[in-house]
Image (cartoon, one colour):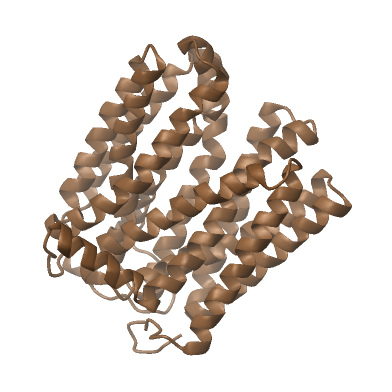
Length: 416
């Protein structure tokens, strides 16, 4: 793997077929968690009826998954820094597969929740280590390109999986959705095992509570990590608030059908895809700092537009326009900010990726909660959440660029 882990020049260049395969597998790793969650959304009423519980009760299957998924990353990251990436990833796939089978066979809600805990314990390993492996292999603009493509996969999973889940539920029942994600895990493990060897060749960090605490404390107190990581987490919190509010806006307020809602989510993937491709062009040309600032400005513009639309003209096309601008900014900030946060910490990329993932999921939970509680008007509440999160992110990141805190350098030695 020496040629894969060597520093890659900052200038854009065509990807080799080997690199394309590697990034495709990393994208599959990253998408595992969101696929397992969003594929269930159209089937929650049917699951509730089958398990003889209320629809509100069965949504705990989502909450439990996200909680274990977030906390588990904090454990998996240091384990991978000590023992490497390969076996934690393969073990994660195996655990996820077992949890999916358990869920598919569940006959009551407690059994389903146990299966979801097992699923999440496996998914957190594949998700957090996709970023750590990318950091092992790439640097500079090449890392930014890899993170952009991984982000596109993470956006495609929640975008397309509700459509897939709805079709499976209609023809085969909700249990078939767990069969699909189990098959996905099996294929993902085979692909990972055939494409990757061990990628973590830096100094192995010790694995005991004090060392782990010191590692996380070192990251939290290092502005090179703290500022871009929190910036990305704020923007991701806005994204999850948007996904959670969209059904209320479109179905309850604008009279969309469930299938139209699924098509809407699928359409958002195209915006994120375009933003990810744009990010890969901006970073080598303008550098990470300036590119992230442009993405933050776009996200804030879309957020303010969303708030204005909710007050003046709460109709579909203005809502779509404001959301598209926010998604464009999010699609630039997320991969480039993640690359900037991880770049200086190759020796503990697992812990850095874990802490980044934990903060993203926690901020996502805060965004979803605020979007549901700030106002009974879903679009207005979403506008407030997006605006606050985006403006705070801009203010935080501006302090970094003004102070010039140890900007990560590309491998050619330039600071961008």
